[in-house]
Length: 198
Image 1: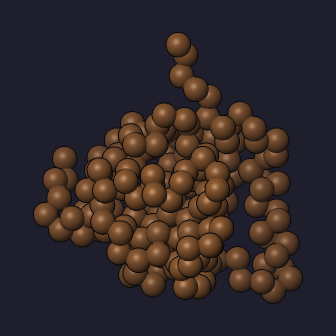
Image 2: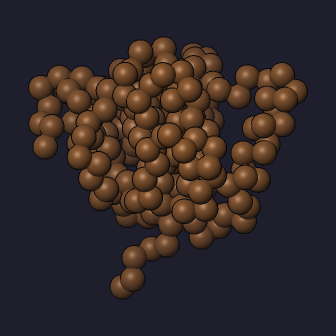
């Protein structure tokens, strides 16, 4: 059987520039559109893997703040926007389930509902591969809507299988307290300090 198509690539009907335009309009109206970058920066990473980076909206802001960023996405259209808007950042076209970047990071972030747009059947491989790109004691931070294709309990199970332990969880990128009836979760998992880097 052929592999399942990626649901994001299959269903996207807008360009990378169109995707970014709404955030640019919000920023022009005085809104802070960098909640994810603010959240990540609070952990003081020197290097960040922007996993499922899309147009690089989060990674671009982190790089602007002096953090070493590598962004990975399988959507060439979205990456074209990232490359044009931040040519100095290392943007890679590839599948998070299998890409080998040849290095490790202090933190990986999967913002923008990445976890619910993974290719069906690839979820375990994606999380395990992200974990392989983390230094010992590094963090994986993921935010996604609940009630969709990735139940929170399943996500925690996949993280545990990849050697990641839940450190804390919030209901928003603004660190609103977690509650069981929340419709969004921002989860912070830590890689074991003595984890295998291979």
